[in-house]
Length: 207
Image 1 (cartoon, helix red, strand yellow):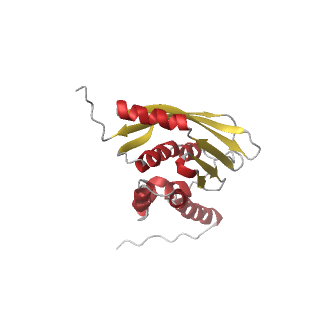
Image 2 (cartoon, one colour):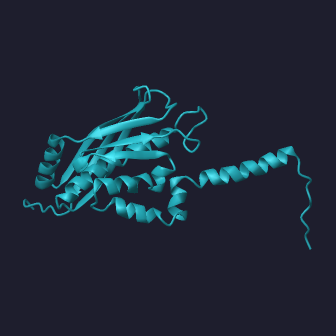
Image 3 (cartoon, rainbow, N blue to C red):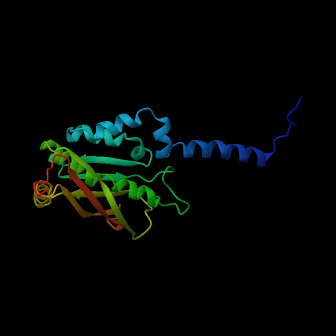
């Protein structure tokens, strides 16, 4: 019979064990593990893809685990989904070794919102759509050492242009900018998000 040897705990051993416990908790907060362990994940994702009011979707996105655990907070959606205001709170959950917010958190915060705006606007008009962020470019201007915010808007011209293209070619692809600011109003990150919108009801009459 094997008997595990007894080791007398010392300071190094205790630190090692505590570090293991803390790191296990820390990595359980990341979105890919939340997808596995959190039973509400698919529920929130389903709600975010429904045609809902601005107020309801604001709360859905606030508690959507991949955003919640990265401290991304939706302040409000503009009326008619013409824009959205978002804040990113600095936290131990999203800090890097330079004591600034992870670049991945900043990208995650910006990634979904243009597709959400287009999806909600055209779904309310009765369109059946496929929407996503097709690609993105990111430029980090300075470390994100404080809470951050950004506000994006769609103009009447943006929406009319997208609708015209969806009705004539069935597929709308375009880059849109996002600048993320710190508390002093300085740009920390600039992104260009390539939005892909496909009209699933479109029939090409030329074929």
